[in-house]
Length: 84
Image (tube, rainbow, N blue to C red):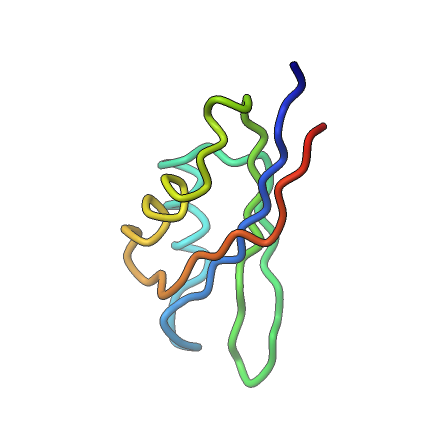
């Protein structure tokens, strides 16, 4: 069976949040495939975090809960899940 691509939008607590630190913490904790920092406006940025997992390890609820434990993260919401 193939791999699953999971895309999750992570929002920091506010424009004063250090998105580079959040990005670094995500990389260390969860080993994503890629992270993009997206400018939203008025100084606010979000992170688009992409994971490639086996279907058995593709539990998005578990990944979202882990992301919410990172200091400075307000929300983590799955945007897309697709089979590769």
